[in-house]
Image 1: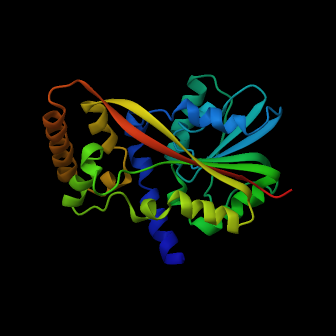
Image 2: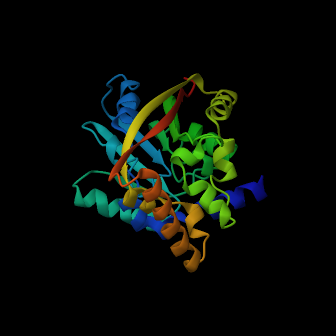
Amino acid sequence: MAHKESAIVKRAEQFGGVVESYQQYRKPHPIDVFNGFFSLLEHRSGITVLDLACGSGKSTEPLVRKGVSVVGCDPDLRMLRKADDEAKRRHLSVAYALGRAERLPFQKVSFDAATIGSAFHWFAYEEATVEMKRVLKPGGLVYIFQYRYPTTEKEEDHNEEAPLLRCYGVEYPAPERTRTTPEFIKDLLEMSGFKNVRLRTIKKLRRYSVAERVGRIKTLSAYTLLSARNKKEVTTELTRILERKWGGRKYRLIPQSIDVLYGYKSE
């Protein structure tokens, strides 16, 4: 477990180096994801929500609603600084804390709900699940959402960066991403004692320009593993590939599937 955890942490810690690109090119999460989350809270007031691996705040800010107290937690100080700056610029009340999912800096039974947006694959799964359960109140909700990658047979249709990065010796998506299937997470939550664990899928069409798709590759941890020369080559080649495939179209609708898993801590 120690070797696996260190490999995951090493890869995850690359994100702080791309925080500006991350903020610019990562699209906001669909509002359906957050509407689904709040529909499970039965409109209670005084809710406290923990957003784990919050990054630059893209998964945290939509949680800010009247009567809801929100804390974002991330292991990368560079991401947290950006998140805090963005929250202040938008006059949003969010508290941010430095910490890893496997060793959360919070007292037990502190939160009514915990959310993890497109980040569970970076955790040491068992340890993080134990910690989530520790900081949740009895009956507390855990809400995990992640984007599904295209299958190998179809990835070239909408995931051109994957084969391109492999040509430069970088495995993408990371093995951690492909291992944490919805079924894996569901089984893990149930074995950890969470009740009424459910899985649902949201399907969306998201509009992208060539520049946005090329910019998105700069937000990937895999991109940070490339040399400066290879980074330039990859973005140049990806631009060429997309311009040829899109046939001069300015925008293209890209299908996305978001798997949502949730369950409740025992009373």
